[in-house]
Image (tube, rainbow, N blue to C red; front, side, top):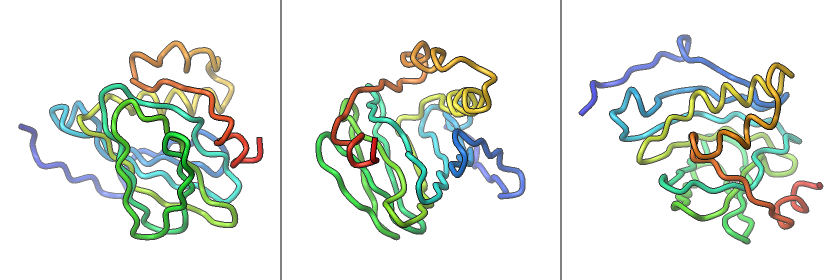
Length: 159
């Protein structure tokens, strides 16, 4: 059992893993007794988004607050709009980024919780050139973030 969590917007830590891609850190597993992890992803039009990946233990939930989000689930592309919700179970490859011509503002949660905040901080350090990209691959087991190749996703994102 964990204590109620109240995080004021002014007190939230925001990290940036790419220009136009901000992650607001809301609650990590250490504050939720492992129950969940939550963040807000604010993605500007044209941002690539995440590479295809999967988690072995957690279900990842997406709730679109504003804009449109393109999401790959296994080998199917979806466009989520404001108010749409998606749950991706463990082991299912997925990726997400703003739909073409749109920004996306998304609440992202994981359950059970998984320590993710240091992973997002690592992504920011890599984006700033303060850490080597190989550290991301080396941390896949620690952060339960396993990258996979997806020609469908690369094509959808123009790569």
